[in-house]
Length: 359
Image 1 (cartoon, one colour):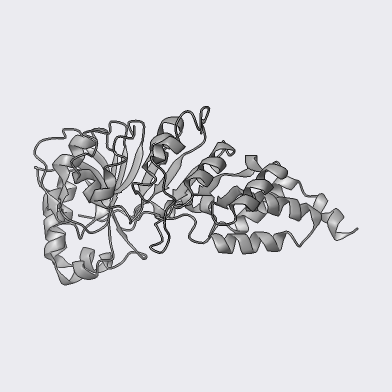
Image 2 (cartoon, rainbow, N blue to C red):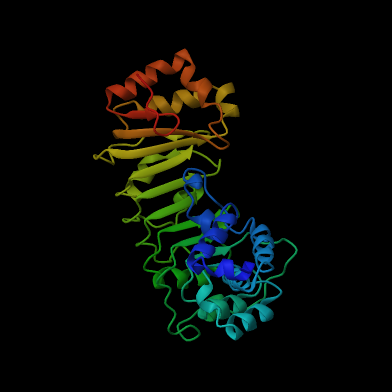
């Protein structure tokens, strides 16, 4: 029996699953849905796209069956770049638009973004990467005109679940267009390139249906930030930019179930703005400074254990790489009083996740 015939004995869906497993460490789809970025945000799911393309192209050389499977994988994750015309023609010529699940947009060709978006209704993930300082954006009178109802009259993205975004004035109209037409949207993640000046163009985007948000602390503090986001249940703060105002957090996100942040940001005590317990707090950091400066631990855990802070059911300790130096913190004799105080408040302290520390 020939090797081609042997391959055909296995259902195509099984081979496709095997091929996807082979790229699961780098695929934008796999990274976006991975739990390993639960407490430390994934900024760009396309960061390893070249490895995905290299492996998928090697699959195409195995057999005619794997060639067809490789093409499906290649078209699952696409980038809008200088090869736009070749990509656009290939998608339509091969009737491959229904394969597209993730799109990395161009920061300079907003019209190309619009064309790709219009023909890929099954997309689940969109990414707008940080800007290249050497690129000059295409200038339009108003980018909102590019994504208006006239230009994209019937756009619906029922499967769009995650947005990874680096805001700028040139592309704010696209974000305004994406959110209302994506009923399945779960999370919006803002990349490191966000600045206070760049927040304002998009804060009038309707984000009321979002359930998960990655953002900087400066986003919450911006005067044009939404006063409340009632459906957010998961909030993941990143960056080292200043004090965490818990009163603002609990007021802005009244249904919050899970909060994660870096312990290097000093806390500010809430003032009776949340009466229900908070199910989960995830604390993360590289912890180099934490080990050197015990006041960082003192400030956070003294607040978490105090009656001024809402009851927390679980606190999970995480490091950026592995578990960082939490081993040293939890073993320190000075930490024992916080463990006892949290236990007395009914809080379960875990390190690592799933391993409950005794009081």
